[in-house]
Image 1 (cartoon, rainbow, N blue to C red):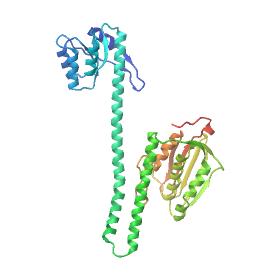
Image 2: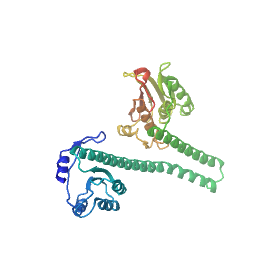
Image 3: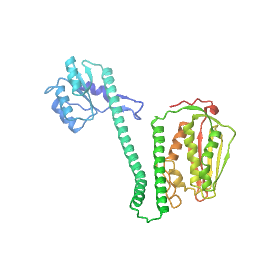
Image 4: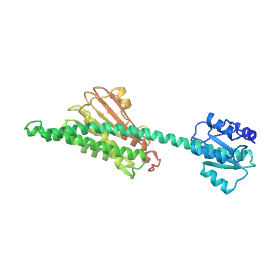
Length: 370
């Protein structure tokens, strides 16, 4: 019987949708329980075909030993004594499936195929879970790092105020309070950006798709940042059609437009210019380009700018607050519309950030909420 099983499996292969390579088998055999134990220790298998009746022991005893010393394998019990009691005991001891004698080669292959599929998908799920834990740990580590600095600054300012260590000038303490409030605003923005990012990535954000006029949304965005632009004497111009419809979630469009326009003002020079251009590109997608006369980026900086928690830190950006999440969120939202986001830039001269959003109205393809 062992030789028959070996012949049936040595040339047996099959494919699984989620596994890139075909699944094939290398077999080893043992004539009794002692040989089986030695083989299990020397060459741990993926699948164990275990007869219930062995010359020197029973399959149930081998199963019990495997339960006491767990291994990453699945067991198929082979038995002519397929009673309910045996099945219950074997299942409790970890058997994955049963194969009653006599069986055909196709019945054997079917049982092995089912077991191998379960084992491989189980391992793949564990691998994904480990990757998730690693990403979660990295995410929390970066978040802790980003929160640590403003919290330390706020604590330092408050202790100066508490101990009146800056003298008797009320203006000094007002500046310390203002700095604390600025840091709190930065942390609040970080939290809100994180909520936006995680909601989008997890698919938990409820999308409310409706006709959105992108031209009107852009004009409203620029109006919202008029004061910020005025404070830095930045001149903001809009070039767009009267209307440009898109089936979209309005809050997602606001996130995209707000990030690009506010960054163009924030990273600009005093008295600089911002031009926001909205049009259809050659592919029929909505294209927003926001050009500034700001500090610009090197090719290396531009290449990594859209990753999570990436902020370009140099002498020119040291005093500018940011979370490093805005542009990564913009790019993730663009992918929801089968679009993309990017930047072209010249250090010291300025940058043009762009995003494309495909509209079902323009492409004649329906857009469904995920």
